[in-house]
Length: 253
Image 1 (cartoon, rainbow, N blue to C red):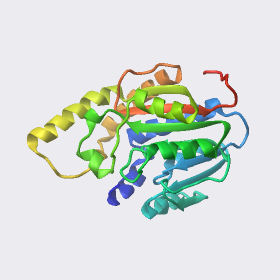
Image 2 (image 1 turned 60 degrees about the vertical axis):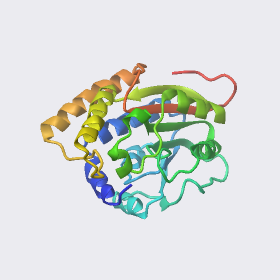
Image 3 (image 1 turned 30 degrees about the vertical axis):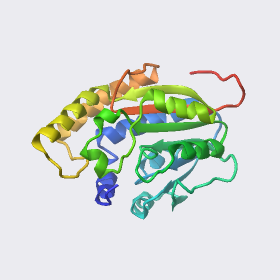
Image 4 (image 1 turned 135 degrees about the vertical axis):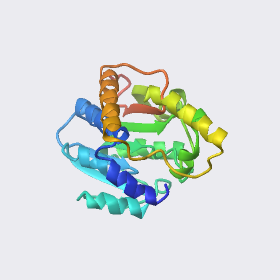
């Protein structure tokens, strides 16, 4: 990610609709699936730390990020156990975590082998632990935003589900998010082509308060639908919860 984006991210994460909705849906599923008191939660690519700030109420939290700039902002949130590390070489010794969260990270240009990273996630989880992934969806939506935040890969539900199952995970939930944004971003991409606007910048821009509030309302409805079991057929992100098997039989929720 362009380093200047970390400051934008840090300033926006608490209020910007995209981040707020993501943190709320992750928080919901951690609360819903929590099997014990004080679970151990790891954020693989913690960025500026807001996800861990939201989840620290549940138990032990730990996070890593490749960029020291991101770590600096995470530490501003008074988070503990934050360090700079590369997921390509990161190895955890044994089963340690009950949750691993990774939001829009294994898709990045810096990750050379996403399958290998997923295997490391599997090894680092306790049996019955959960991997929660949010990833950009559909190669069709690739645009200059992707270059600004160093996104190299986009996923379909079928692709990421297959990768996770191959590693040994059981898929508990898999859905697209932001279905309305699929069409908005496709239009935006085509406008960029027509206008030949090559300026590299992300989609993260400050919005008028009433628009941001409206988007937060829309996302509350979407998160509610996801929380009661609805899977969307398309969207700009794909959201997956996968469990490290305890036995051959697992209960779905």
